[in-house]
Amino acid sequence: MKQGIIFDMDGTLWDSAEQVAASWTLALHQCGYADAVVTKEDMYRTMGRTMDKIAEMLFPFTQGKEREDLLATCCAVENDYLREHGGKLYPGLRQTMETLQKAGYHLYIVSNCQSGYIEAFLDYFSFHDLFEDILCFGDNGKPKGENIRLLYEKNHLDTAVYVGDIQGDYDATMQAGLPFIHAAYGFGQIDHPVEKIDALMDLPEVMKKMG
Image (tube, rainbow, N blue to C red; front, side):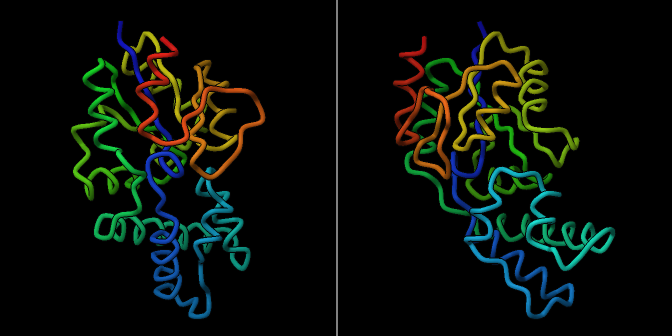
């Protein structure tokens, strides 16, 4: 039986809000918006949304192609910035993933981010050996629930769970028809009773309990 664990990124594997905010401010200045600033708090309040929705929230002074071009620049600068500077990992990530691999689990990432974001994470921390496949909104424009299901089917999984930190992650997992584990150390609360972990390192024991 092929068992998978599919992870969200922000608030589950790492916190890159400070670095992303710095990179977007840099991109805004490069594009001529000299007085515009994106803060870490801006990033937190947009967590979990697709990139087009984030641009709508953060760049109300733009519209149409101007907004699309600005977002494209922000994403490109962000990916390069993260590949160079990284973000803040949650404790014990590599140890936890290696423990799960040894227990026979296959590990994946599905996120609402732009293309290149997950790759920057994997490149900076040399984590390519931990995760077998990735999929994101930027790859195909599809919502997270659909992408969870697509990755599940593509990798011929018999069972899988999704680990995420916000209500939108739970909702997407329910749409995909999979069990959900709440990363309660992340950015959000879940409106339903679910399995949870208070630290990433708790996950192997919770997986044992879930069978």
